[in-house]
Image (cartoon, helix red, strand yellow):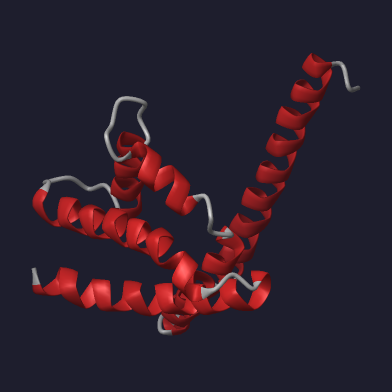
Length: 149
């Protein structure tokens, strides 16, 4: 439980940064965003608890995704609150602190990255190219189905 509380401190720091970024980019008052970030905090907390108590090799992000899907199912009582609350957030503002933390965590593993050297670049190029062509293919099929192309 202590590890969950330590992780939640980092989550709250990220949420505060995201709220500040949201305020700067959209001008939305911080008071109006409290429900949104409370809803996201609940999902993160539940996913951390699930990761600790459910014996599985799934990452915490997978638990957060599953919990988010379960919350948004049509027959759940909290669906309207979560959809309305989280719908107010521009997720670009949430990406800034998350990418900052990701960069800091990678920075702490520079020796391991040096061992992988050029392999990381090759993997990055393959993944990026695959994502680009996959998204292009999906868009092409969708546009053809709609008769736009």
